[in-house]
Amino acid sequence: MAADVIDGTAFARGLTKDLTEQVAGLAERGVVPQLAVILVGEDPASQTYVRSKIRAARSIGIRSVEHRLDAATTQGDLLSLIDRLNADAETDGILIQLPLPPQINIAQVIRAIDPAKDVDGFHPTNVGQRVTGSGGIVPCTPKGVMLLIGSVAANVEGLDALVIGASNIVGKPMADLLLAAGCTVTTAHIKTVGLPDICRRADIVVVAVGKAGLVKADWIKPGAIVIDVGINRAISPCGKSSLVGDVAFNEAVEVAGAITPVPGGVGPMTIACLMINTVQAALERRGIVIASALIATR
Ligand SMILES: Nc1nc(=O)c2c([nH]1)NC[C@@H]1CN(c3ccc(C(=O)N[C@@H](CCC(=O)O)C(=O)O)cc3)C=[N+]21
Image (cartoon, rainbow, N blue to C red; front, side, top):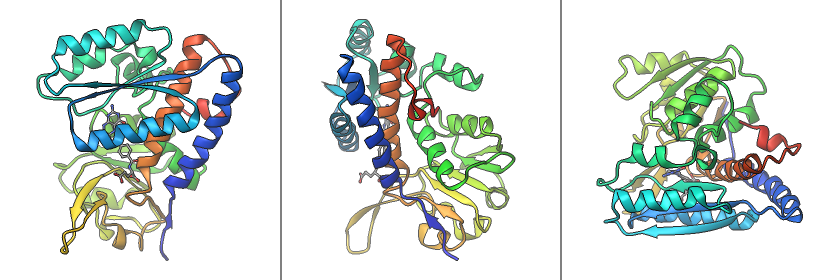
């Protein structure tokens, strides 16, 4: 039997609608969440993502301010901009689009962001809070993945979860969240020996490697939940470009119990969760407590 195909676009649309109502409620109290988006250089993919983020913010009623910096921007210039945004009372969230040009020290830049405004959840303070289960801002993609998993499995306690990919942005926080949800978690990566066998044991597989078609149908335990975070550009024999994930979707869909497509799976959830994090930061910075299932989803 073919898997349920999890519709991330529809899920994200629902989140966006709820968030729009909440932001409208805040506007009545004079609070307008504001997101600063910093883009360094001209990377076309980054420009596309930044555009989507700004469009999402606008549709929800979050104010966004774009800062476009030259590809030759120095570390000092970027740090001064961050200092200015940290000090700016109107700015609730600061997002620095990755990747950054080679002259920039990314770790130092991330450390410079006020953790309370770090809507990506990359600052060591937020990482530490997450690892110790004491709050903080959770990275957008893993947060979105947990919501998608929750849409097909009410309780994941005791399940075997495999995360393939161990980046600071996706794999590591993903493993933390799955562990916190009660899963038995394995973190693997592209060099892991015996990966297909490890994968066959998993009830939940999250793949974030960036290798098209890595996970084959015969790696998947029948009925497993398969979440594909990969975004790879594929060129078809007739020269057309399309997006594909890290899972061989067409065959995997026949074995999995539930699976996310690419596009239309995790990607839209990442953007929706960035908006949730921005509203969360706006509320927490101002000490506003509201009853919201959405903001508590972390
Ligand atoms: N500081 C920072 N934070 C990020 O969250 C961040 C980043 N840098 N750098 C790049 C990655 C990538 N990322 C995506 C967001 C949305 C889609 C998305 O909406 N994808 C659509 C398709 C988009 C298309 O068609 O090109 C989908 O999967 O359906 C994808 C990827 C956020 N990132």
